[in-house]
Length: 180
Image: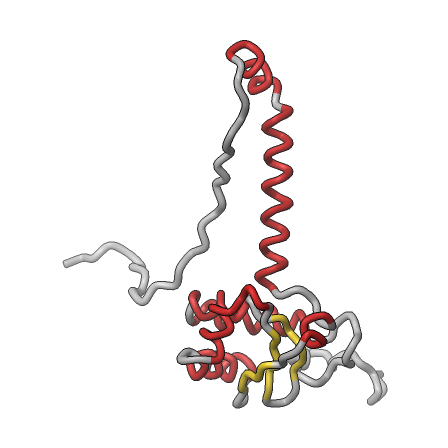
C-alpha cells in the first residue's frame, strides 16, 4: 500500500510531467534539462529559430516566462529571439509547455556570470573537443606518419565529416508503392 506522501506514481498512472517552477533554484536540476527539451521542441518547429534560441543562456523559468541572457558575441541571435521572430518562438514554447509562455531578457554582467553556458556554447565546446581528438589521432596514425616521413610536409587541414541532422519535411512519406 502506498502512502499519500510517496513520490512514486500509483501503478497504472502516468508519471507527472515536470513543470517550470517545480525545481529549486540553484539545484543541479534547476530547469536546464527542461530548457534543453524546450529548445529542441522549438528546433523541431523551426531549426533556424531554435538555433538562435540555443545561444541564450538560461537564467530562469517560472510559470509563464523564460528568462535568458545573451553574451555580447551572440547579438544576431539575441535580435532574432527578441525581434521579429519573438511571436513564433513564444508560440512554439507555449505549445511545448502547454500554456502561454513568453521570453524575457536579463541584462547585465551578473546575469551572464551567474549562469551556465548556453546550449550552443556547450555544443561548440563538444565539437572542438571532438575535432581536437580527431587531429591527435590523425597526427599519430602510422600510415600518415610514414607518408609525411617519406614525402615530407605537414598535415595542413583535416576535414571533419559531421552527421547531418534530418530536417523536418512538409511532404508526408510514402507508405508504399502506388497501385494506379
